[in-house]
Length: 401
Image (cartoon, rainbow, N blue to C red):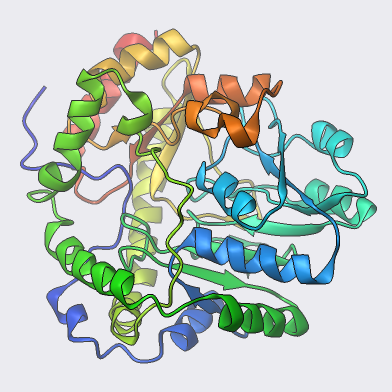
């Protein structure tokens, strides 16, 4: 395998420019609302914090106590629900998909269900129609987890508007990043006002943590380059792989102690400056995806997730399913850690994280386990050039015959 000059990130994030750090980007919330074509947005310190604000707001409206999530999703969702004093219910996904299985969901939802949290994963847009119909029948809310899909559209509208509320992440490596940050949206003006009230009531200033985030954002602006990524990402990844720790390698080691604080005006201004370049950047990623997706999909034993007509996702990664877990593991044995941006989205289904067992418990979720076992991701970063993409195709072709 040829040597890449540096390292590709596992997702295609928008690099920051030094000029962004001048902090002259203007009103971030207003500009982001314009980008999403929504009336208003709320800014939080993370996507998880945005979910907490939404859940706390819905708790004020209802005495219901359970929240349903897909069995294949980010572990931080579990901690957000626990922090709000709510009960988690895990639902299996459709076969060979990350989307909630309607039949399983209908069996789980009842008079205790406060909300259902479907996930739009890896920039792909989930089909929400059956989820919303089931939630409405039992009187539950729908919260769209669009953490990985800022800018995606469903029927021409931003994600987060089909349900009752939605949230996005601005974490490191996302399409737009404040190093850590989040955004919440809601279609209903009354609910937006309540979300703003909740945020004002429960989010502390947290000056020390915000000062740390400012320093981390400076480091991110300098290090999110092929030459810097081995030091802030690649070395730790390869150490985890040597230690046979896929959870650490996938970056899934989280704590229930979720930082919760206000985002400074400076970090928001940095985000506002970078936001001006995001539409063109996402269009570039979409063109690269249109060129590369057919090459991947043509390989035997390879399925690449895409969007049906009417949905327009973003393309930070290609989400790939292989014919078996053994085949996937052979491919990852060569490519995960090679610096080419090939990785796993999440290490496993929620019930299979050892540290989540106090909250998740035992669950029968065979589809989610199969999806976790057979899936991998390939970066769509502009830094993955054609020659190294061909090497990835070659490895897939060799193991997927």
